[in-house]
Image 1 (spheres, helix red, strand yellow):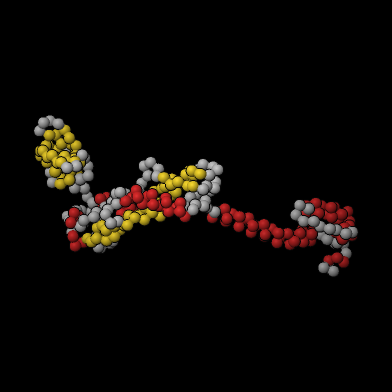
Image 2: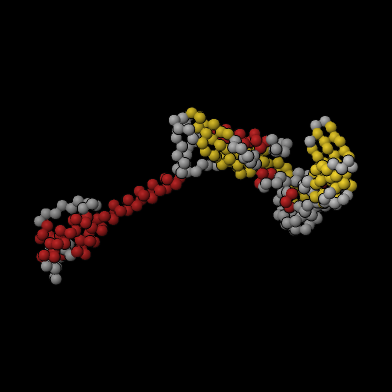
Length: 292
């Protein structure tokens, strides 16, 4: 440093050096305060490059601290979530569990797993949050529960995502099966699976699948559902069928003529002997049922 201060650099006039001395403190003023004593003789010993390097080195720790603070703020913003009391989450899960129980098989174990709200939500403090089921909400699988503030300075309403699982025995393949395979009882077994993992429920009885044909390959341990099976045709158009209308405590049957092919799961029209046309579901060989 003593060598640098030994004299004025060549090719730099005192006038230019004075201009440098006036320019550099103005540029650095917003960032730091520089106290100069007898500035004119001192600055005549420094080149602009020397001053620029010195300022950069002195500001480097400050810039690094600013970058770290900004990164920490962004991380906190991304991970911050609206706070919900544990009892509110438990009430929301219990509400969906009750709804799922009405259509679940007997003895099923139902789990309702609450998700998280959008982290961008800013909920006002609330002393009483009331869970509710929105109209048309699914009771199985991906669902949601409404939460509304009924006692607080600001009335708000949000929807909490919830995943509902329904664990019960169902028919699964014991080994991988290709599309077109005709099922036999020895290929199938019962295992506990999540009935809510797909829109259609799985098959519950091994005997009911004997002779059915797969329309797609299935993996070992995979539950068999209606979408995996070829649709059965119970009768052809024009066949004579037995039409059964049944309700609570009664059943009435009569013969009629099918007006279309009787495909499993698809409604079919039947013309009765009186000429009246009724609609029911094919459920077996030349059999149509109507539940009242």
